Amino acid sequence: MHINAQMPRQKPQPLPYSKPPSMSDVARAAGVHQTTVSRALRNDPRIPEATSRRVRRVAERLHYRPNPMVSALIALRRSRHPHRFPVTLAFVAHTSGRWRRTQPRLFTFAYEAHLAGARAAAERQGYHVELFPIDSPGMTERRLNEILFTRNIPGLIIGSFPDAHGQFVLDWERFCTVVIEYTFTQPAFDRIVHDSYDGMRQIMGECARRHHDRVGLMLTAAGHERTEYLNGAAYWMEQKSGRRFAAIPPLFVAAWDEREFEAWHAKHRPQVIVTSNALIPDFMALCEKKGWRLGTDIHLVNVNAAAEGPETGIYQDPFMTGVTAARMVIERIGRNARGIPERRQTILTQGRWIDGSTMGQAPLSRVSSAL
Image (cartoon, rainbow, N blue to C red; front, side, top):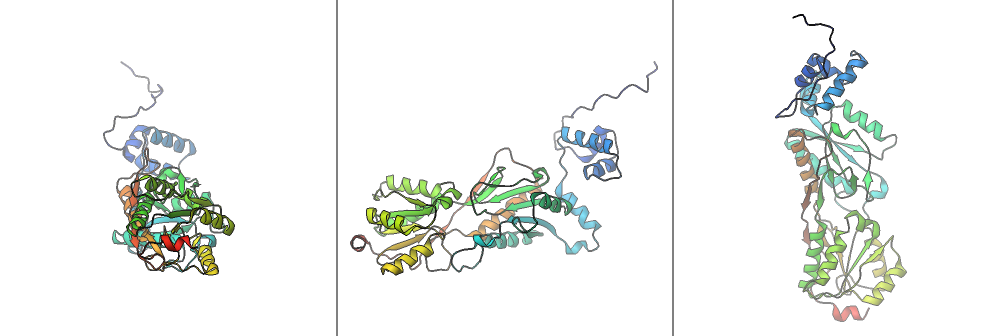
């Protein structure tokens, strides 16, 4: 029986792979050589556009995803000095001045401790972490995407943003991505965050141990939102528990407002003020103005205290958060788990109590009533 050689070829059908398809699987399904697939997926101009489009359609239909570690290894082998260039991970962060901490700390900017931890953990596994400031002059989403792709960077760590609901767009399917804190919300990547709910419970527990039953929470509305309202939720639940805290409503402000604070303080007479770095300088200035002695006349607890500093509060250990982020993204690279996960995972890191000089040991019921 004669078979017409000019009969149109049937459209390739997806194969029932028990494991992720390889480049050779794509080549076989598309009817081309494996080298052609490699070049077509890299938009190599030597491959005709029609062929490139066909190869990309087949690769997408088969759900083929190139292994970023293989791409990075090939890039290293082509380099003149491959031993000098470990695989690079990108740490994408905001570095603007308004993100500076309000008081001297070990790290000047909020992202620096995260970056230092990520670098320390990555270097132990043969990786290098490079900072990419998303807010630097001339940096756009398209430019960042081109840089990361051209340099075969397989993994991204997205640092915390100054405000809640941060987002930008990259070709996410090319990268293994993890996020630090709650502030980058779209797309919903796996993330590492401080357990703010547990931190507030630690604070309320320490207040109860010191017999302070009038605890007031004061935060900026933006700061409260940045933690997905967990500080307020834990504060409210602790008031409803059996610790017998006074039902003092939290004070959420757009920015420091002395009149608003004084009205709230006069009405509820809190013994302890639980607040954050954004409001502490103004609150301390008010204490100095009124002659209130911190740790004696009124107590201060910082929800994000330094490991070595004057303020009592919760040390969130941002260095360890960075360590965890690097380990997580490297693990995703090992599994070639790129793109947006179907269901996001959140890893919570526990903070620890720091005994500073802004909270005394004795109850303040008599002192606070005289303020």
